[in-house]
Length: 297
Picture 1 (cartoon, rainbow, N blue to C red):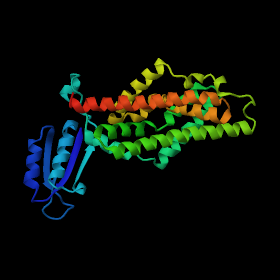
Picture 2: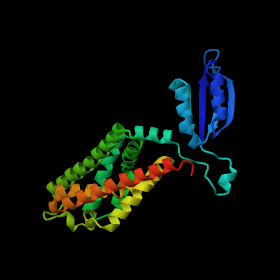
Picture 3: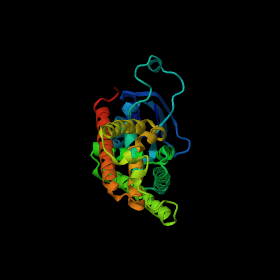
Picture 4: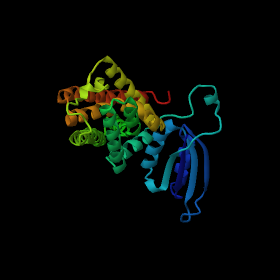
């Protein structure tokens, strides 16, 4: 459920009140004086179904209401609702305006994103070197690559080329950072003698990370669907581990191959990474297209 708070002047108050009364998906409208604003301002508070959010925001913008005069937030519903208890039509829904906001926020290579992606690179590289699946899973839990992947999908579906390009550039920067960090770390370990002179990455128990087969394709395709659904529902932190299985391990494997021996394996890792990213974006975008075509279902 979404919650609207809007401070409206006397000139627009009748039209705004009529909008809230007529728009489907708007409930429990409250109107009261705005004690913190200048005289003549009225505050409207209403509960908004997610499916009605896009139409509402478009109508507010058409009325010329400033962005500082209204706020649309998501609230967690605690009290039961009949249709939720019956198992039909959950209380949560799809709000395009909310997805767009998240995409814009996650389309840039912020410092936290770069820090987490490099931490993930170190953990994953060590996992490849010592053949530890647990370390690789830990790296996937740390990695934030789900966010720019989903932002890219949103930009493509919305026709926002600049948003899609910016998000994909952020994803690319992240993947390159993983490769470079893994390469530098493995080279330093080799130079300091912590790696055997004849170490090759294909000797690792994780050599399947550089080989493409049907399971790789199916996992990446399914992960793209899960990525978009989790991005919309706020469950990205939990699902991010499953998404990163298609990106971080292959990137780290490529970096170790370049820095610690086994350069002939690098081509396979590049192919696996490229196919995985392409499928993530394709199935994630398709999921979003289906949701836009079938609103409220």
